[in-house]
Length: 304
Length: 304
Image (cartoon, rainbow over all chains, first blue to last red; front, side, top):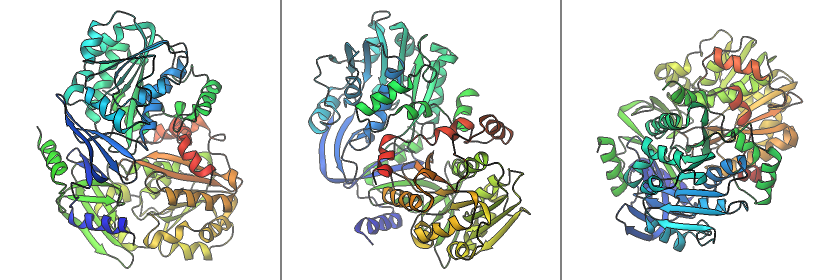
């Protein structure tokens, strides 16, 4: 029996995870625990939340906010590739992008692969997340100094309220869960502002929670988006994210009279892009497949 | 703050899961913990393994073997529908089916939806699993008395060794992880026997582990299947299973000169079947989508 197997058995019997060795993401009914190595590498309590970085046993370095896993070095690409390349490859003429949240920088790293983008405005409320990521997660935060990026430390809700009409081709809402500072990113008034500051053929992609681990947030956000964008313009899609509880996560593509995320996909171009950039999760088949929802997930949002 | 949220915080701080309240599935690096209610409903140590049934807080009743989650009432349909309907709806002329494992009965419940099936032989090594499921998981084990079913308590490895050539149209390997009695179900000699007892246009569907949580088992089984069936005849597909660690699970469809699982799918017939039976996970889009593998998973098996 290996040391890991021995440890696993002891934990199962005693229920005791050494809190110096495990980070636990728990909703009171199910919990995902990730084993860490050595000391916490970074801990700072910002005005908004507790930001920490750990080294894990088999997931590389890991960023947590209030002990919820934001990303791990070995798994982050699934989320970041899917939140960016699905809207970008469906709408290749996108030039001006607004990103809310995204402090770790992974979304920016994927955006700058698209040469057609002229400017990216990123509004992250918590400079501590940006600082921690720049220092400890260089493979994720690598594009945070890109000249096309205008990084503002500011309140995203206030920012879109004050933003000019029709200013952006794409808005990405790359937020944490709807507790703490991200709570206001799950409201109708916020999405009405987002809708207003989109160009007439603009699109949005959104971190829309787990249908399994956060079913209420997933359903309510879907209802809200349908009210703002129209029922036919809201397209949830799924991504496997093993380091988020349940592993089953949703993103949502909403369009303001822009391209349909499957019908308007240029398959060959998309496949070529994935290959050129050695993407690790996204490919043209996965792009299309992600929109196929199991029946129980469709029912959650179609009967509501 | 709700009681659940309070409990979640306490657990995160102390690392202490009360072992009477949580079942923990742990590989030493990541762990999935599921909260249970009340006493263990069933516990028996068979000659092969420890079989237990628990009531959970939000997943219904749960069957575990050696404390690894086998199924929960609220989530089992994803696995059972996908391991059965993908091969069945691709090959509607299937008449004789052999099932190895499947003691909880969920696979049989899905098989008997197909009126073309004439006989099902199920070989489960551990009668304790069958007994526990019949008593505590009636919605899963509901077809274990079906007249088309011949249920044998026997060693599946020995059974296929002794089976007649070309006896079955479909073989389903519905096993637990490759430790304990299931270990021999992950070997080349076992699959050579399976291949031999398939009709010339027979197919197999297999529980092929998590590319994320059990990468070694996933890769080695894929290599083994390619050696036995041929590289072009082995098609892994993915299912979201939130109650298995990482949530990312694979099944594998192998064909012996039978239909291709996507190219030969009758989409309309498949959609009608899903609708008629009110399936909860499977639909024709999900059938096709499941075969779209993220690049990092393709690389695991194509470079090996």
